[in-house]
Image 1: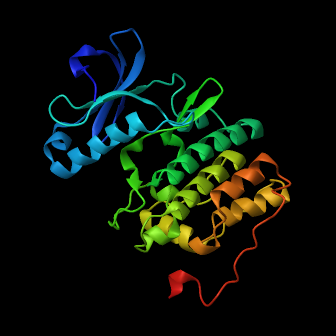
Image 2: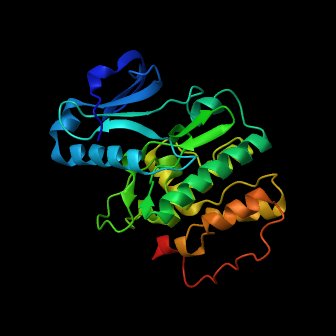
Length: 275
């Protein structure tokens, strides 16, 4: 996919150490700063994991959107496998949140930009599966959705899913197949966190988080009434009752809401987790 090799990049410092890869701040031959992702040996040697990394390289280099982290160079397989990504100097949105809550204006800007990137993935037939602040990267006045290592085609038959329990849709805890609705729920949890300064659901254990996502409503917010209602509908427990992401972004852009508001479907029977 590129004539460059791993040795062509000059490593400067370690940015992150994950289970499948190490990410370094590096300098490309032309002097450009990049985030260089190097898969671990066990990933390169495991056919399933190697194929997953190769897909990340392919998608990062082929998908183009102003609010997706851009892939620059990459080699998908073998000892020389790597992925060079654009480097955003302000780090992740999670790191930004450690300094304090965002202003309403900043939170809205971040959500609108990342939301458009997520819609773009869905329109192209892909699911992200791991929408959360640590996978959003921050530049000067810009926010980009990154880490395409969990991205999968919607048409993929596998029922496996990825994601953080803090942001995971209720139906995935129960074995449902990932969908744009589960991505929308994760986005909703992140939206709640950015707009209110706190996560809607907390738990010390995986079981605590599972029960919270399945059973508990999000705590009240002080957001404008219609935006609060739209946010809660984006985090509806039932996927079929969940607000479309595109409609939520319209509410976010104008808290008066779009001209025609969706009518929630009538609830039938017991909630799905009691069946």
